[in-house]
Image 1 (cartoon, helix red, strand yellow):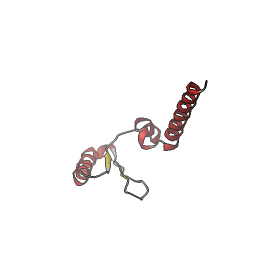
Image 2 (tube, rainbow, N blue to C red; image 1 turned 30 degrees about the vertical axis):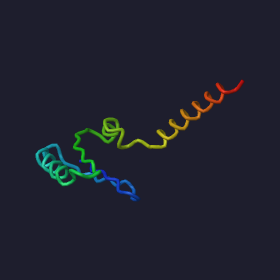
Image 3 (cartoon, helix red, strand yellow; image 1 turned 120 degrees about the vertical axis):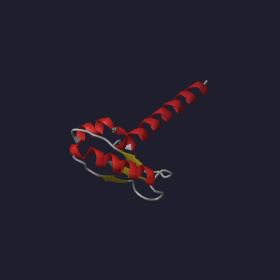
Image 4 (cartoon, helix red, strand yellow; image 1 turned 180 degrees about the vertical axis):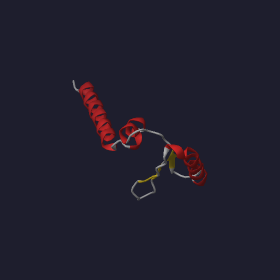
Length: 91
């Protein structure tokens, strides 16, 4: 179970709870408890079943992605748009 939250002016926090495959019912109960507790908040509870951490990262990449890549892509796009706009205005 991944439980992540982001509060204003606070770093992102992640709580991970591990359940054995034989504890499927217990995991579902805990998931429902967390979901109902934080219904109207920014906390995301995710119940996943994977064989390895690598497959978890592949399946839920948005929880592990570095925002720096996104910012870099946006900056490159904006720089390109500015350059094209400037070239169109040049006589």
